[in-house]
Image 1 (cartoon, rainbow, N blue to C red):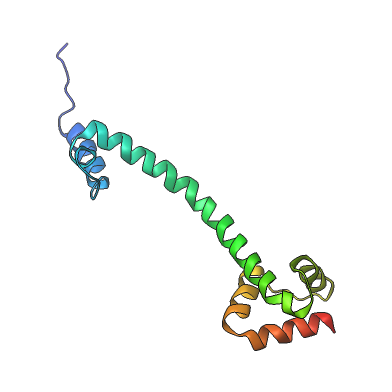
Image 2: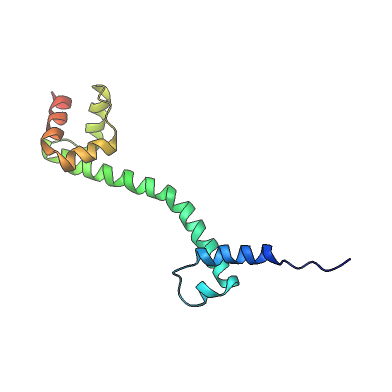
Length: 115
């Protein structure tokens, strides 16, 4: 049986990886073997960090809400507890945005919860 080489398929696979390695430095951009390792690692980081991004943003929202409720004599946990007891259905992202962009509106929410 004749030996079968990769041919067009291998070239296509190499070109796809090297295209993804655009912007990398030195042989990470030009040599397939090294570029392949680098691209694979980058894709693993991208997969992981799509989940980490969600965690990071939630932490940021919590910090912003906490900073905004402290002057009103509340802690973050007490504020969230009072929100739930008063059936206020605003999530952390919206509350954070409200505290950041419209402090008067946020004060109104805190007054509603405290009242």
